[in-house]
Image 1 (cartoon, rainbow, N blue to C red):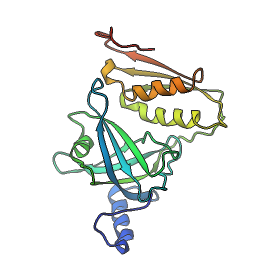
Image 2 (cartoon, rainbow, N blue to C red):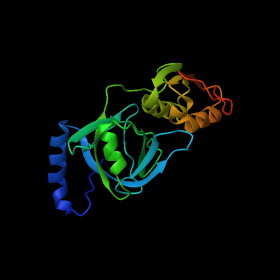
Image 3 (cartoon, one colour):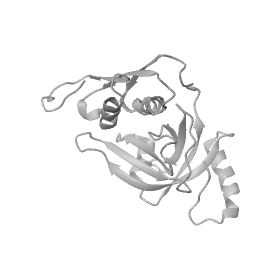
Image 4 (cartoon, one colour):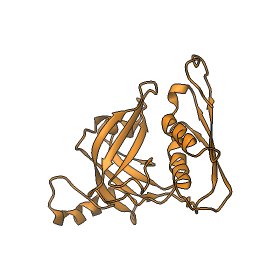
Length: 219
């Protein structure tokens, strides 16, 4: 990902990128800044949820993140100390010009303080790709996944990549566990994929607390 720094001379980009790379402590990956384009609270039924949309330097650019890889984001916690945390975008390279992070907000989260303070037009320092797993299309007939809480984002990324690839006939089965129905992340998006790929994508939701569910349907 290319660097884009608000208010800086283009000649300073290389120097800035080197400095950010040192602060990440992960040489060899691409460093850059992404501008926050939009921040949206997810459906009010699903609490503590935030979708952040970051624009890339040009409208035709893609993030170029391999399947099941993540990026590292750098920010500051409530004490002003720098913190680095990995996040998996929910977008693919078919989503051109931007990428999205779906965040589950916890009061005690150090990086989450930075996301709460981030305003539209601000820039987020990112670095990647990172991760060891590499998916090869068609390597298995069926792909089984187990996820809990915010751990759904890498599974969501892989499922989308598999099912949206017309050359990949792999079936996907997901078991997704949460404490309550309101804690389920990306439920509308998951249900949409189930509807779009009947028989190829199956999701089983597992809840620790199942009270007050008379008004919802969980498969």
